[in-house]
Length: 79
Image (cartoon, rainbow, N blue to C red; front, side, top):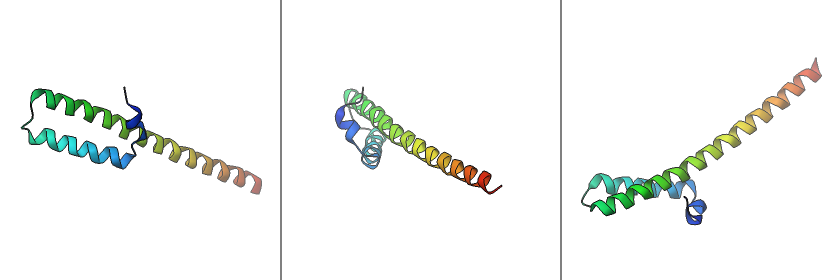
């Protein structure tokens, strides 16, 4: 479950923290418990990023659909 703090993270903040988590995991030198905590944090951050990207895609799709509607309505009025 994503916390309220995670929900308030912007895309860039979540992405940057996720990059740091991955870097730390790849570097090694952490205990199993620390590695698991990092992995779990990474999963949460990935969800935050995914939600931002899905939201952006939905907004883009809506804007494109609206533009097509306007073009379609304009085109039929000219005929």
